[in-house]
Image (cartoon, rainbow, N blue to C red; front, side):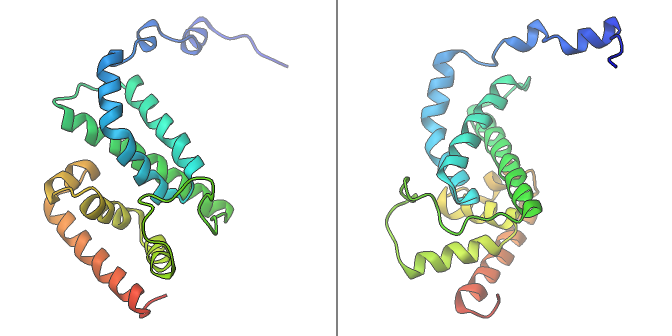
Length: 185
């Protein structure tokens, strides 16, 4: 049996007119997208191991950025916020996979790897080692070495202090080295 909804409950279900407006105009969005989509997709692909999931998360990331009522101080602030949204979405996918015990064995064969240069056993070893790291360690390593971000930029993107980033990178590099030498499993 369905109960009657009150007026306040109905109002909550209705989309608010203010929520229908996007945070930026089309030209500004195109510019941001052209500057950020490729590295953001590469990050999502590395985190999820699937081009299809990376495509979906990329779309969801930009959608959430456009819908969120956040005032961005600068282009860098907007990019950092975009990355944080993507990182949270990738973490959600990881948690879901862990709960359902579903991790893909191979990446999507229809989409080439990014960057598509080194195939072979060294690449597989690196992929396996990265997969064993925590999300925070993977994020920090990706930002530092794939994106070339400074410690301050990494701290801002991950919502950490610079001192914390230095420690996280130190631990992540040390763990990666041990994994690649076969000292840890």
